Length: 471
Image (cartoon, rainbow, N blue to C red; front, side):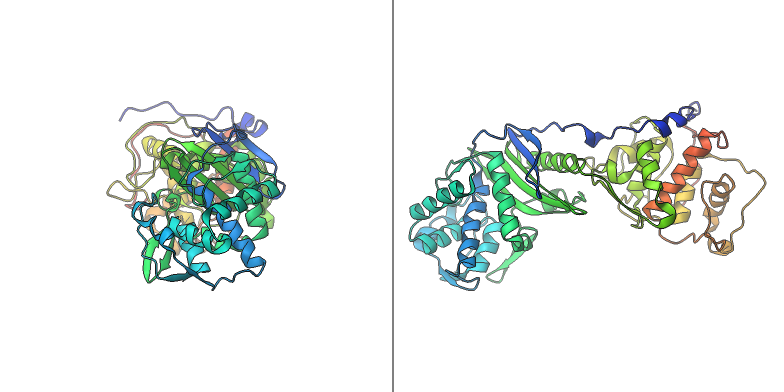
């Protein structure tokens, strides 16, 4: 294979002095016609796109309907186990309910069961039955919905309880409504975060396909409501909590279902960059995330989480992304791993690492990006890229016998050059799961070593060393 000149980090000192701007710092490009990100605690708008233009929100209308049901429970007018009759008018919706799930209703159902099938599966007959029971008729209930909007001071006007007819709701109004709902009835999240529901003895998957199509996203999303109609496009409101911070996002009138979810991910990641970063590390590692952030490879920051849990286990995908960003390797196209979602935040880094010869995969074209790393595996990945020559001072740890044979040379080279260090007791703990702070510290040692001239640098394109099957 053609050799590439060594990629020497001659500007490493500049890395130390000049923090790298991460992708989450710039406002995202959102395809939806209207969008907002809001801080849950204060109601502060963190991102906005045409947030005051009223648009139809399809089944996100069900949020207002559900709020009125929760109000009725709080007022003592009904209980969660109150039996609600399923009227002929409610049943008439079943054959053409746009949610596409034909739910067989009994003669009557409990309030809780109706709320569950309503918010999780978006089954419209439940909303009609609840509206008729609470207000006597659907039109009377719609009047209550609009009265509630005025009471909350939000720019929203409804024509039916389910969003099956066009209505007028601004992104700002939907975000405020969702925030009010969670603040007043936080228990609603126990329903909205569920991925499925058992109703009348049958199992139904959530109509909100974010939990399935974007399961790889580790953003702690625990609701809230999706909606789709021809006159409304694809809509989605979401809420997520990272650390002590909760964010609410709304996108209205996206061109397709997955676009609304991609927009929501962009909004969430961007919104969480607006909070001060929180560091939780061991005492010895208290400066590690700060230095990593200055150099542009603090994973909490890169992922938009704005928190650093130092003792959390680190995954293969995260470690490789850290390494690629710390070495400032240019993006490089190559053969992709079949199990790395191209939309995952680490995808480009992992595939670049493969092109540079840092990783080969686990066989069958797979990489297992979410698998956890051991300390000896990290050492081997680094040696594969650095190709460090022996200095004649082989480091022997007290638990040398526990280091796998295929890993020993890598562990010794990393120890010789001061990239990896053992415990105070002189052990390496090779098979112990690596955590975020130890991995970050290892990469910092690498960058400092290159900056100080003790480590020659990263070999770009060359034949990769022989690796065990699972690296």
